[in-house]
Length: 437
Ligand code: AMP
Ligand code: ZN
Image (spheres, protein in one colour):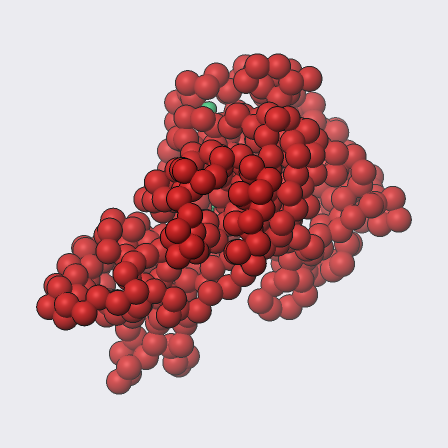
């Protein structure tokens, strides 16, 4: 078990060749398990005339077709599962905007493995049983709640399952219980600071918080630095998704330079989202994951829709597990305006350079006089700035920098703090009101 820097030294210190060997062994077992247990995969593999015994090398994985979110919807609720639902102890469901939601089943072993992965991540960034861990994310179907809960308990911290929202109560807990580690989505971390400011709470002076885990939604490096500075913490990026279990899939180490993806749990591929051919390390493409230790609902070559790249080179922390760059966004989030492809994160990166701006912004796409246009509303830090000339100059400078980045000239509107709609869950950054022709 845990020692020094590692929670699972036997897996975290594996060399590249040891990881490859373990992956092959687990891949073969997973494909066999899917073939024998899942009617869906049995048919898929028969369809391409591949038997589990045909998987002799890691390259053979590429013979297997991709699994998509649509496959999960088509087999709703659990037609892809490799064991009967009656042998499972939990399900998580994520609601899609269209069609059926997707459901992921978990056996007891899956829940244990998931808790282990989250504990491993938290341990990696210095969490220890003496810490007090406050989870400010939604519980219920959202995996950020129970996922971190079980992981933090497994590590042995005193856990405060505060759940999302109710900021004054969060602050009371942070103060009264001496919370040292917290988990929140990045948009909520910014909100928390705003309320602290209003209440005259200085996190460095009044709180013991030193580690923050932020994840579940895309955010820029500048947003992270800003959160760290505001709250006086180190903030670590946590990546996960319900289909792969939830949080615990990939996590930053103390180097804060890429997220180690646990390769004893997953095989990672990055593919060109159009040709679906692999791209070389260092190039951005769609993340495709194969689970290696799931019992209830293993997924083979699952297309995540998330866009990222593998960071080349070794990590000074000594873990050979590959590092993913912070997510660029999801292919479904990409805005196509006047034929130009834009990711909201590009806009956020520019906005967060400006000290005058708060963290909330909203991108609206609309059709004005038959022309598609983009408006970027962003909140000002001060409740009200009445120097009109200064505001105009600021708007102009933001517009110029955005145009240089996204090659389109948006209309920039600076709005007072607290004006833009807030959500308790993941922040909504884009609204598309364009006319569909
Ligand atoms: P869900 O399954 O509802 O928890 O959503 C999972 C999705 O949230 C992922 O596929 C990503 O698009 C997004 N996501 C999760 N963690 C991060 C992160 N650290 N950075 C960017 N996006 C993330
Ligand atoms: Zn590292």
